[in-house]
Length: 421
Image 1 (cartoon, rainbow, N blue to C red):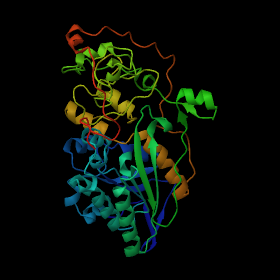
Image 2: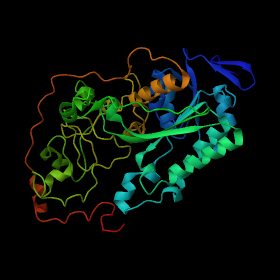
Image 3: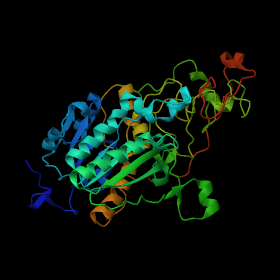
Image 4: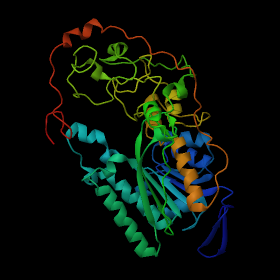
């Protein structure tokens, strides 16, 4: 059944009411982070596709969109279109972030390189573009980690361009690609999170990514360039009190070391190049090891599957609550989540910040659909002032003092811990 948002003059001649909701297909929907942002920008998810059962239940708890709980490789585009009440060419927008592990920076740190396109998980790029090929949306937005376009390792980018060229040749379309790496904090998200975005328009319109509206406080003061200071972690979560029923104690071997690390620092504080005790070698651990939030700065990237010592941790030397993580990812405050602590962390950590999606969605709506922007951003975080002083730093617990000594530094950029590339 065709949805009321579609008007047809004749076959393949679609008119979108740009003052109403624009029909959207969502792939790799997760908990809906990107969807909520595009929804705020005037788009409406007609169907979602997600394999994770908890994430599907989260979306179903919050929205009435049809959601197909199935592997994309086992789901036909015909089924996706039917669930949304759309035909080929009807969708105004197709969005999704194929799983990004093959292009993740952590793969380079731990092994010196990664398998990238040889990794079976990279086939999700093919699956995403298969739906583009068969659904022919007017616009598609693909999100991924910024490692997909590392210099000298652009296999993913080249694959995407080749697949788009094939679609254009096969269907006489003119998908033109625009891409950029965006730092979410530059657009008002209280989190430093770099992600790659690609936008393609079926009829040859080129999308221009919005200019950053926020920068670090230091840059704003030095350049006087008209941007605002970054939204801080305090702005986002300073008013939240954890639910007493939620156990937020840090656990594991290193939990009792957290109180000796100042706000905004990580394990590097306890090396011979910082102000703590020399307990570790310089850069011998991953960046997020014992990483702690600072009230006066944005959060670092919320992780999807952190180990017990992987941050960011709260400035009170504890885990972040589910609501705090969701706020740092700019989910709407009324969104509820389904699943265990690990499941919720994965759902939230894998999401595109909803506010960043709203910023992109508004620009896509304006530039590619000719709809003027109306009103302010609905998911923006309001500043909370004053920002309190940093938490006091405690002495290193006695049980770690046996680690004091000389430690070898990491062998260098692009090498694994053992010095291999």
